Every structure is written in structure tokens, then in C-alpha cells.
Image 1 (cartoon, rainbow, N blue to C red):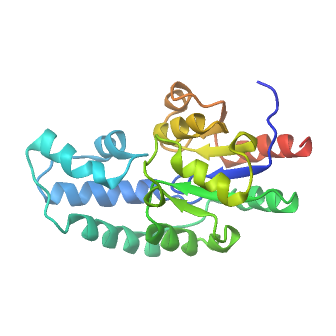
Image 2 (cartoon, rainbow, N blue to C red):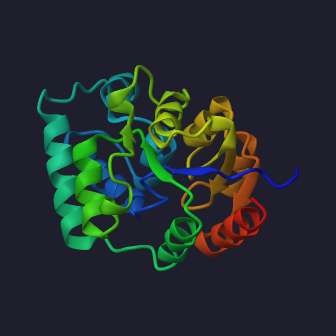
Image 3 (cartoon, one colour):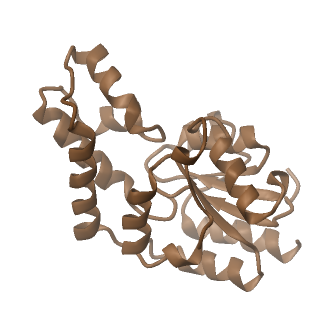
Length: 224
């Protein structure tokens, strides 16, 4: 595949900008086990990573016949925010990527299935929220969550860049599917989802880590 035109970059949040996936997965697993669901980290990842928490109650009903309490979601967010505030640390190799794009005057946005209050906590904790200004988009802002492309289309609109001139970076199968469906060049960033899954979801390129992502983007923006 030839080098894409890069006039804007849209990042997923969890697992791309902030190392939240393992923390959030641990919190959700512990909580579901307390409700009597036979869960472990692997099951939680396979069922829910890249999706929305709205998927959780029907899955637990189908798998275990257990109805979660009405306040389970607010409890989950409360526990997750505590974990983020206590344990969340920046990706060590992310800042050079953001610095590179800013130096080349390439706008950046966030497109996540998570809610704004979660991103406020996580992006604020690692000190990068201000880099994106008003260009932080949630699936709660659009009609359909990933794997639909809606949140990425909104992010491109907020940047004022055609989606076909954008690069999407996502670490989940649903996120990669959303990026591909949007028409953006889509990079699958390997985090806790295996590379093979991201390729099967249709990723145009694979970055094995943030250093690899930097190398890809540096090459592309140098010729844009």
C-alpha cells in the first residue's frame, strides 16, 4: 500500500493514548465476579474490549442468568476512576508522536467509545487532554458506537479534514473496523489485542508499539 496523505490523525483513547485497558478490564472483572459471574480477565477482554459497557448486562444474563443491579454502571465507573487516579501512567513513547504532529501542524482528535467523563479523568491524569481541545469525541455524541464509523466521522468533521485524508489509530477489532468503514487509513496498534485480530479486522497497517507508530507517521508526514 502506498504512503497515505496525512492531513489529520484521530486516536482511539483507551489502549492508544492512555494505558487504561488492563486497569479497566481488571475493575470490571472483579466487579462481575462479586455479582456471581464466573469471569476472568481473558473472558472480559474477549467479550467487551472495544465495545461499550451497555453490552455487559445482556451478556451476563445470557451467559450466567444473572441480572446486574441498576446501579452497577455507576459503581463500575466510580471504581474505574479510582483506579485511573491511583495507577494510570503515561505511555513512555507517546509524547514524541504528539510532538511530531504538532510540529507539522497536523490536527489531532480523539474518537472513543468511552464517555467524556472517563476521558476527562484518563487524559487529564496523563497530562494530554489540553492537546486535543474540543476535538475529543465520544460514541455518546453520535448515533452508533464502534464498529460503526460515526465517532471517527465526527472527529474528522471537528478537525475540518476529509476523513479520507485522515489516519485512524485504534487497538481493538471494533475500532479498526470503524476506522476502515469511515474511509480513513487505519493503523492497528498492538496492545492487548493480538496483531492477527487487528489484521483480520481490516487494518491497513500494523504498529507493534508506539515506537513503531512514530516511525510510520514520521515517514508519512515527511512526504505529505
